[in-house]
Picture (cartoon, helix red, strand yellow):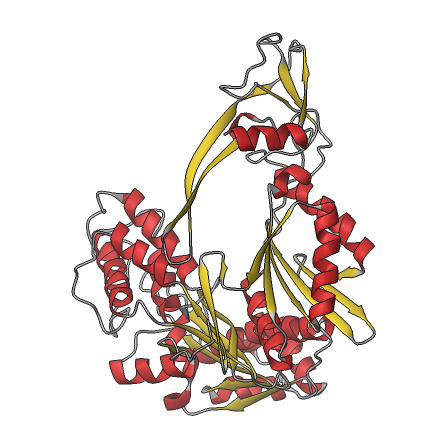
Length: 499
């Protein structure tokens, strides 16, 4: 607590002023936690002073809000691109990052408990810098960082607001910002040291050495690339569900499972359901094999039933048996973009909406995937499939633009593999029929990309349609085959010197 308080005073976070009349005074609170290492062992005690953002008033204490969170697909794309060039990865942490932001609104806060000035005990803190807990704190910190990055030569990515790119001659660097955590990869070690020195001159930085533990994800470097694992996080989910000794399941969802909103009695502890389903969503960062199953249980967050909880427990049982599994990224070429897409027509028993699923490979690496229920009802399987073609072409266009900013342009057309002949025909022959008038915009968008040679929609046999894993439950043999195709495997055997 002393360290936190003195850091705030040194940073000139506030001025003590007389309590104004008719002003909103927010509370100050102490938050205590245990900082853990990547293996779950105790590192240190941590105390943080935060402002109670719940008591802030919109328009009075804060305006617009924003949090600098880099997209997961951007992280995997940058990692894949840097791996193909053999660049190292470094991890940085901005100490008390939010405290660097300047406030543009007048905010008053009560003095922190235990540190009330005896001479001015009726005074309040007039905040000059942002504080954790304030609604505008992430936006203020992000604005401060963006203003500084131009001074050290970084440009702002238009594809992702939390990606910054440095390019001077043969020197190139990528910087990923996730709130106040940073991943930095550079073309040379001297450039890395120079950038870190410049960042350290402006912000209080902590060098966390080569990338190894980021956002709860353990990153292991090996001879062929990277292994991303959330084993510790997955174990915590299993423990939170009270299923540490349960019998593992071989697949996360039954082949015939189609959950309904009214098929059973309401689950008696909905808050447990909400907690576990939300935690499973973050686990899909490195476990795309559970994406479809998690998407299905998340459809019923508003009113979970007992049947839905049984489906959620099956996912936990599957995780229990595959704790060590994670996502592999390899040092492969990034000159081609290949996508697979599928739709399960009218799969929802309540709304008759279809389920869309796709996955995107950059070289040999899986960088993006999705499983979601379509927003409208499709009147045919071809229509449902074509809506997914539109979605995956849109995603691939975004990735191509991102790679162009990373100075890694894709010279070849994006390959889109579908097992629906009608959807493939529509992509190259935009003939208007009565049955396709309502998806005319989707057809024109895809056809334009096909006509320009940026996209090719090709047929793939259903047996090799990898994206089926994102739209339906599969038999064990097929599920394991597709899971392996997504590079979801056990950790690699490490040799001496690797970590």
